Image 1 (cartoon, rainbow, N blue to C red):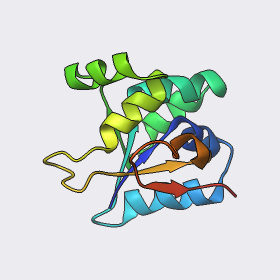
Image 2: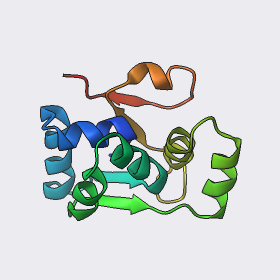
Image 3: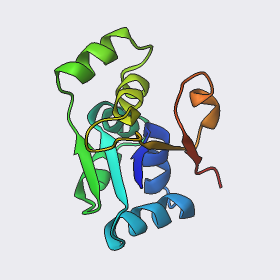
Image 4: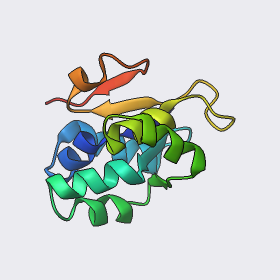
Length: 122
């Protein structure tokens, strides 16, 4: 299971969201669970709640996805960097053949996009 935290999920994790905490624990403790955070969403989460970036980056079960060339080109066409980078990262890749699920506390943000979501709203 491949899951990408959007900026709202990262901020919620820092505020003690139980669902986000369980997801982070599962990714750290259980084989076959992978949790990611895109660099652009990490920046946006840190702007919304200072300290979130360091908190998420320090967690051992989360892989930070860099802004590489293909991601940068996707971001250039997006409305916001955080959403565009997360959407790009959720698409199928050789490492994630079926793509990834986006964990969010703002599911309405993703309604117009072809992505599976995991609603972390308490």
